[in-house]
Amino acid sequence: MIEIKNQLRPADLCGKIQTLWEASAPKILSIDKDDVPGAATPVFTVKGKYTARGWTEWTQGFVYGSALYQFDATGDEAFLELGREKTLTRMAHHITHTGVHDHGFNNVSTYGNLLRLVNEGKIAAEGREKQLYELALKCSGAVQASRWSKIANGEGYIYSFNGPQSLFADTIRSLRALAVSHKLGHVLMGERDAKISLLERLIFHARTTAAYAVFYGEGRDAYDVRGRTAHESIFNMNDGNFRCPNSQQGYSPFTTWTRGLSWILLGYPEQLEFLATLSDAELEPFGGRAKIEAEFLRPALATADFYLDETPTDGIPYWDTGAPLLYKLGNYLDRPAEPYNDYEPVDSTAAAISAQGLLRLGHYLTAKGDARGERYWQAGLTTAETLFGEPYLSRDPNHQGLLLHSVYHRPNGWDYIPDGQKVPNGESSMWGDYHLRELALYIQRAASNEPYLTFFA
Image (tube, rainbow, N blue to C red; front, side):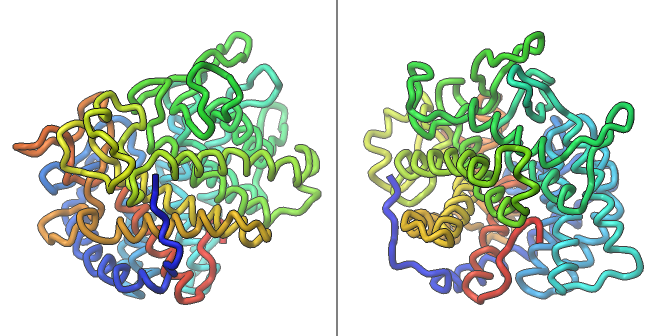
């Protein structure tokens, strides 16, 4: 389990964070140099070079959002112009993309970050630029919400690109699109001009995910361990009833794919922060503030505790807690993760996402006067400290990736295995690099008493 460093403070990481931004800048520019209009989006590296992988273009927002974070952290306006220009010229089709559940990844990372920077006074919006960002985000949230499957209890979920029967754990973080659109006063218009509340769909999706993608040790099945997660939940579309857990990128439906766990661990604390900005009247039709916050806090706490217990001492997990060859590593939870082992890969991206989730959960609880918050906050800093140094931070100018030892799709064998190695290692992914930058910016702001970083600022 993670050995939490209880004396760490955000300021203690500022030196490493400065090194991170120095390493980050040339990598963003290198990727942009290779950017060709109409070409497939960079997804992960092979021998240090970003390459595409045809599935969906779910990582494009991370490419240009990374440039915006670089500007936010350093003030270098070249990265603002890069991120803004590419958002305006390359991202429009994502706004109305009806075929994916990734609107929060693509559009909140670009249009959303630009609107946040405007609202924080960090950049000036020329002409109707601010209204353009707002319109893009309004539309994105409504399009995301239109991918709706109703279940037997009358509520439902945003379905994945696998089809109406499929709920992905990932989508809990893409709810940001609905949240921002709702905050901007938008709704989804249906048949006969029915106004469909984006907040309602956000809450219903979060409830469904909490009920079926997260386990609570209550005997749901023989593998019901508190905090364990399922990547995919399958429903019968004829009657709306839950059928079974499944996994696309994990080892099995009955093991925990750690990046799926991480999306949930970050998604719920972020949404708890969002709920705090809403009035009691807005939440009353869906059960009221106390009920909804309790429903969101429960999976956040369960997944955070599971992560702390099932991750090696330095905060970096292996790609699946039930990966079949982990037993060959012996007591692997009692020592730091080993990215160059011969049996199962680590997934640094799960750590980058989870670290931010732990920090946000800790911050939320501490603000509520809950003493449990300190443990999660310190666990997040502990994990971040590991990620911001070797062997995870790439300072090699010839490697386009920033965060090393990422895993994309182990079951499909998509990840590059270097010569002489037996498992994937030494490579990066666009979501990992983006979330490492987001984690660094979050901690940097905490250290310098800048405004708290949220997606809905």
